[in-house]
Length: 272
Image 1: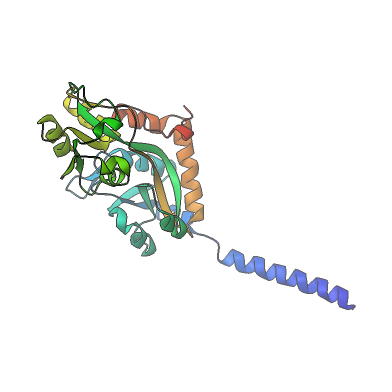
Image 2 (image 1 turned 180 degrees about the vertical axis):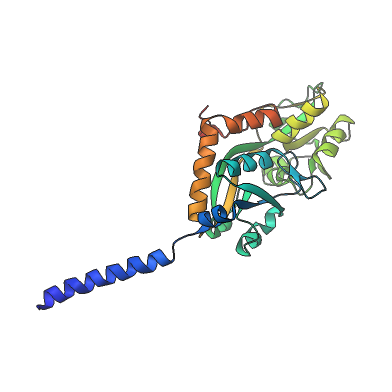
C-alpha cells in the first residue's frame, strides 16, 4: 500500500475518532428536563411586578406567568426557585436551576460566562411627577430638584449612571419600595421620582391613581433576558424558539397588557 493511501486512511480514521468523541459529549440539557418532565427556573423573589414571592413558597408576577406558559409549551411543569440576580451564576454552576428568567442587562463578563437570550420584554426607567406639576416638563428639568428612587433598584443604577444629569440633581432620596417612592412623591417629600415604567403602570392601574404622570423620554432602556449555562445549548435553543412563538402569536404582548396595561414587548421583537 502506498504512503499516499495510508495517509488518506489515517486522516479518515482521525475524523471518525473526532466525530465519535464529539457525540459522547453531546449536550443533554434539553433531554434532561424532558426526562424529568420539569424545569427548574430561577426567579428574583424581590422583582416586584415581574416576580415576587407570596410567602407560601409560591411566586407571582409577569415573569412567572411567561415562564409557566413557556414550560407548558415544552410539555413540562415549572418549578421556581428564589435566586437573587447577583447569585445567578452560582445557582447555574451548582445545577440548582436549569435557567434564570428575566435578568436585566447582563454585563460583559456575565455574557462571556453564560448564555443569554432575550425574553422578548423591555423596561424603561422614567421620570414621574405630580400630574399638576408644570415645572418639570422633561428629564432636563430635573436640575436642582429633589428626586426619589427605590434603593438597590435598576432605577437607582440608571440614575447614578446618568452622568451630568445625576450630578446636577439637588438631592437624591432613597426609599425601600416603588410604592413608598411614589407615595413620597404624592406627599411632596420629593419633586420627582425615577422608576421602572412597568412598575409605575401597575401601581397606577391597581390604585386608579391619576395624580402622577411620566414626562417624555427615558433615563435608560433595558431588555430582559433568560440565562443558561454555556453548555446548555439545546435547552437554550428550544426555549428561544418557544419565546419567538409567544411573540409571534401575541401571547407575551397580551400578558404585558394584563400586568402593565401596556405592551412591554421590545420594539425590535414586536411582530404583532
